Length: 484
Image 1 (cartoon, one colour):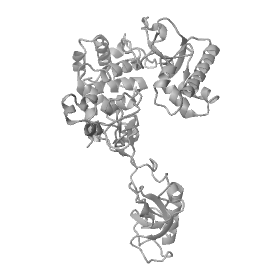
Image 2 (image 1 turned 60 degrees about the vertical axis):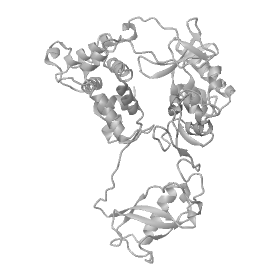
Image 3 (image 1 turned 45 degrees about the vertical axis):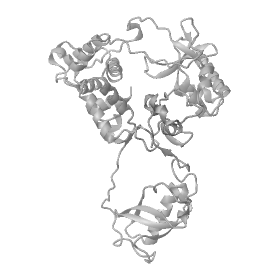
Image 4 (image 1 turned 120 degrees about the vertical axis):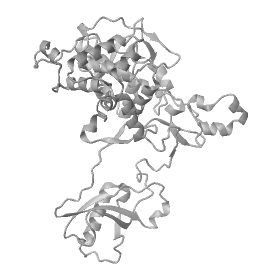
């Protein structure tokens, strides 16, 4: 479960919101207004409406049982999904809550905790046949910087480690966490990036006659890698890469026995698979696409024996010959004593900049803007107000280094149909003609799908094809639109 979605619906902010972290910017062009609106849409869903909307589905009975159970447990009225999730999360954390007096009379003592259903308690469910694919075929379709033979070798190393773990524990369900599999593979492979890349691709794949799957350990609730021998009910798909969706959670059974299971069921069924209501799906996706949260630490000029300045360095005209195209870094907070001089401030700024930025390793501060001609021995106190922003002129900035900017020296351009104009951390592809970057998802390429060897954006396609081609089909049908 994504806590930014679960806690966003329940509390109006992500998990880290309790420590002051707030929305900064989203992926795929999501704005703060979009995020807040999505939170409002989901959190205000009424429980009675949810029950009615699921009345024609197989999950109707399970949802109705959960709502009825927790309404009986609560002394306050549960109207919306926010009310229900808050109560369930409170119960899961073991915090005190207002229990319905009628239920409290027959409830177990306060020292007892809700029992956790074990595997033996679960009703037997016939396993469905699962489609798998040989890892060699998967590796051949991956857009990887490593050769296929390296990917296959890494996969074999991981499977051997899983076999050893299974033999040691003498259990059919013995598995390894991602970190354990990573550490075991590092004994033979030094490239951790390669190991992580292969681990990400190993689910429902066949390696050396063994099926590798990812599954959640019911005891620890941690995702593990497990292997089993290839059986007849495993369908091998050797032609096309097929993404097998995760199965829906089992029916809730008797609600209230396992709070975590009830939360998971409600999360997956209602928030991720709401029937025939596009608004809920869009709101859910908006919250999941909001991954950048920051905590703002306001600048405070405390009443003590220190002077505080936000110092920024302006390069000289000779340094600007390289014509920097991006904004300068934010200012550095510099603290100096009350008796500090102009020279002391310059020295502190040089130290702070040299320690922070590689491009400023040879920086030499010449003068403070607005105080030209004042000797370095002059005391700052009374001349520059504490807490103000100070611009300093300097020389020696290495504007040609590739490490000048966080994204490197390349001056690339992002312009995607979703509204993104900068790298937001999501997977992107560049047009081979205009070299403009856009999201693969917005271009109709699945997240797990390989990027085509030649990619041309909608705008370049429109300029290359004859105008009469527009009458036969539209590029928007493929999830793209002109970028001009």
